Length: 611
Image 1 (tube, one colour):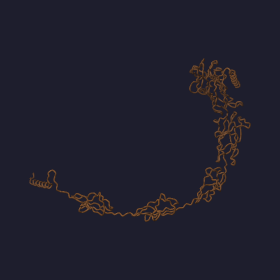
Image 2 (image 1 turned 180 degrees about the horizontal axis):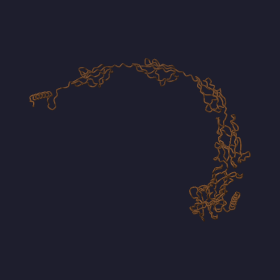
Image 3 (image 1 turned 90 degrees about the horizontal axis):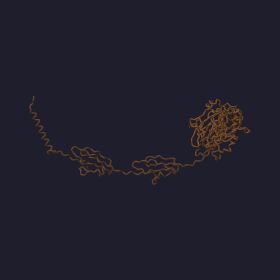
Image 4 (image 1 turned 180 degrees about the vertical axis):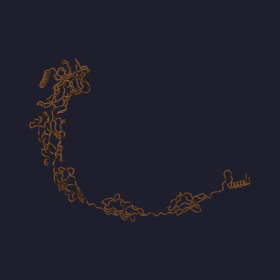
């Protein structure tokens, strides 16, 4: 039956191609000129899912109605569903929104009808294709309708219709048809097929017809390739420190039931690079096609390819371990690659010793067991009277060792370089305070240094006038500009403070309240006016210089010229005062009052007592 179906498909395609050639002279228009077929994957394994997409399925040209019967004025295309010899299984078909437009601008949606190559009436299954989202016909729906979905292929008719109708629109002149996206055929790889030498991969054949010419567009073939394989690698030749190389042995095995082809090995060696062998560097990854000596790259099920590849270490910093990361992919399909387990290579690294010749400086211990290619830390050494200028590779001290960049590659000795320090003269500066308070010396000052100005000394009865270079005190020392050129003594200069006469001022209050004296007033000073004293029966009239109280003291202008006593002046207060209302003296009123009091007492005495 399979042979009959395959023969039928071949016959259909041949007839279609012949019809196209015969009709070519009469029809110059090309239907679906941009029609293309793409796959979501180039390489597959059992269990993978992938998609064939039919792109640009539309036309913009006058459509003539040549097709007859119930499917006239319909688009028709063929596709292969699933086949036991290619081990793929159709899961679903996704149709995008599809619209027909007539010459007068009217838009129609579409219905889809499916039948296999052996049917005449078709599967009674229709779906409206004018919704905004994709319309999906899945495998379960197919199986339910056909009871057998292992046919080689199917026909799909898409015809214009109005929404809600199962019948086509006939007699209209269609100007164009377009879809809102690609038509998608979703497949899954299953392990139920039989390998065939002439079909090492699943394939997809698509042909399309239109009402315009009844002729198929160019047949579109899409392929994906089986990629069931295994890869092992191991160290063939250990790392050689002399030339920094090692070799790995690779074994590629076809672990699936189908031939595999176009296999590529990739490797990210992280420091190592392959030595020749047909590798290419692509985005920091090395890629190598797997071929035989004859260049034939198909590997049959169960077969293996072995080869040895040498790698060279390019990094100068040798580490204990290096990791190789890689795997396989087929047909340039790096996105669907198969990574393999990382290979960690242990490198036996030589170790060296570095000795240090300090050339008279303090001793430095040797550094032992330095891994080849490593850097070392700079040791410290000192030498009295000298400045350290670094470590050098040679005794002549011409080639300096850079501890940040240079790496140890053998046993070696590094030599210290020194530069003698210049002789620096130092001096002492002493301070002679000439009878004043002591001032601390400043010792060990470098030649050319400035002297720090000390706090001024003190001396009773004298005022400090500065430091001078000479005992005669004719040349002052400027602490801001002068510098030390030898041992130096600086001399304090003093001025005698002038004698200030002082006097006491006392206050004789002449019977009034006491007033404190003001003592030690400088000659020419003013006396502070005290609070006025008080005296019963008297009024205070001021302070006078003389006891006769003829010369008053003016506190605003008078100044002290000697010890001075100031005398208080008083004036007795008057006792005979006339009352304001009567004009009588206070003595007369007192006398009258006393008389009235005596008369009252006599009257009381003479009055008889009442019983």
